[in-house]
Length: 438
Ligand SMILES: [Zn+2]
Image 1: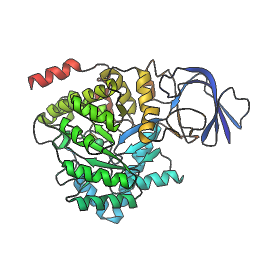
Image 2: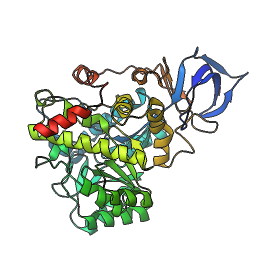
Image 3: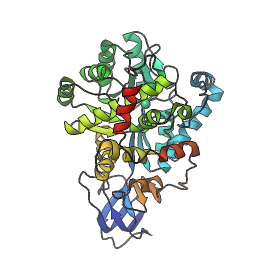
Image 4: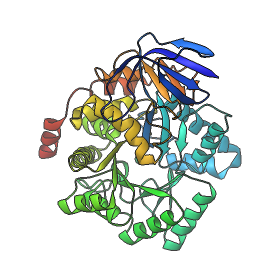
């Protein structure tokens, strides 16, 4: 089957991409076969000068949760226990995972990396998508993250291990589940911090990190690690972590180690901004939770900027499932990247497409609109380099050469109303003032 998309204004995802005006894109089965003037095809879709970008790649997704804000958070541990321990309830977990993955796809995310899920639902849903049973994005799955007792996300999207021997058994179990990545939780986070001013308390020991990374690499996996403090970053990069999630301010020494080890930072601005900036009466955080959110926000911004200045690979992800971080707002991560990291919309779009594909090691197949790659494309009304917000409402999403049916998404009003107010400032003064006066 040959489909030609005519009259496209193409932004191909490459580093210094410029709009290629009025081109045709020929899709043969699931791949891009030609870009330029196309004479013949089985089907013609006239895009009438609308803009075409590569499918977006979200590097930090938790598939079980919605990101809605709850006044009284439900007992996630209890819920996960119920769903996983009783076979009859397994389908509930799978259903949630499927639904949230589909929402990502409808919002233009044609590829995602899951970095902490419930049981083995992520890889199961990935397999259903790959076999064509259900519609969804390309998934690179980690399944449950590995953590320690009382560690980050224990009992929800991570499982706790004590000894090195137990960690290695955990890795073997994930190998048997055929995961694509391993996720570990090195430090604590905003939602489980116990000390004011210290959101990223060390939880795993350097020795544990080293042991897990070495064995994961032997098994052929890369390791992503949740890290939210300068000490955590140091421990992660020195002991073999491949992608440091969230990040924190780095010393000169740590930056050098990063360069030597070719490490990557995946910034997640999407939960950092609202959890810090929105008053606790509306975010339902404790006041020191909010203070720590400011610390994390400052750290994430600083480490991402340090990465950019020092030529360290920087990826973007949203950390969906955190309050205010839904499965359909990846475009906001790009907007915040331009405002907070002071990069151009072009650079933000490149980070979220071909650059993120490179971090996955998948740049030969996805991330840009080039001949020979999978036809993962998003059609937009306006030029996103003039207005990134246009990505919020794609006209069409195409994955693997197939147009996604019915891309309308039911958005959460409370979340949207709050986030819409936060989209055009750099928060620099705000961060300084809050941390100085609380
Ligand atoms: Zn996360």
